[in-house]
Amino acid sequence: MAMTFQQLMKQDAQLVLVNDAEFAESITYTPKAPPSTAVVRNAVVDRTQLEVMLTEDGESDLRTAKITIINDATLGVVAPAKRDAVLLDGVTWFVSALDPEPTMGTHTLTITTRELVEIGPANPIGG
Image (spheres, helix red, strand yellow):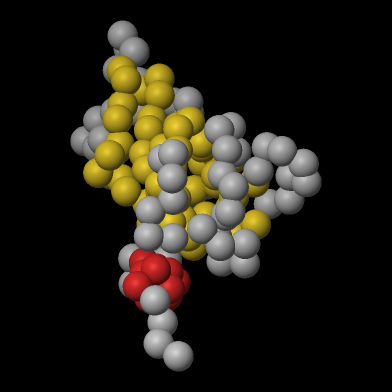
């Protein structure tokens, strides 16, 4: 039996999009709602969406980026929610917004952190 277009899109997302040998990188995802069990998943991190709000002393007050994670109980996350935690590059981020509907078997989440980061040549924005 031939696969449907939707099944093919989900398969492509699993084999290519969230494959750490291709586009994805490892994150630790912890839902806010019980059971709050942390899981390691692969996600595509879009650092080009990084926004930095500067304080008067040149430090960031808020950083925002986007991640794409597969809509799958074993390989990704089925029901992401605001305030779920994402550990990325040793920094804890929180889901601040999510697309209303999964697209092509994936969720696109906006993640935000308030960790202060010095802005300067040694640490360029988005670097």
